[in-house]
Image (cartoon, rainbow, N blue to C red; front, side, top):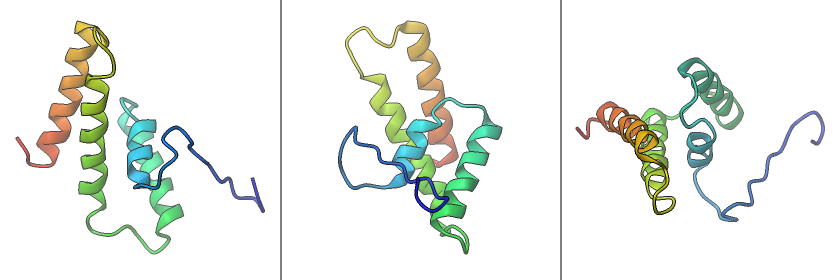
Amino acid sequence: YVGGVARVFDWEDAALGAGELDLATLTYDWHDEVVQAAEAAYVAARWPSGAPAAFPDTIEGARVLVGLRLLGEAPGWPDRSERRHRVELLRQSALRLGLL
């Protein structure tokens, strides 16, 4: 926290990459209203003049990547009911991107 601004460091992967991946991971399976508020805060912090036109597809693509990653975390996990739920979230993202 410096000068009234929180600076977050995510050392899980210790890599440079799109912040949208972190946002999609952080907000995975949250309520739509909370996700929209988090995205608005992200956009305001990163692009004070407004997000680039590609942002909606970029964040949705990040959700697809997170969904795929979470499906194969460990053998036998997630369990069958959770796996079904995760596949549905993945399907919804793919539909929004026009992939299905």
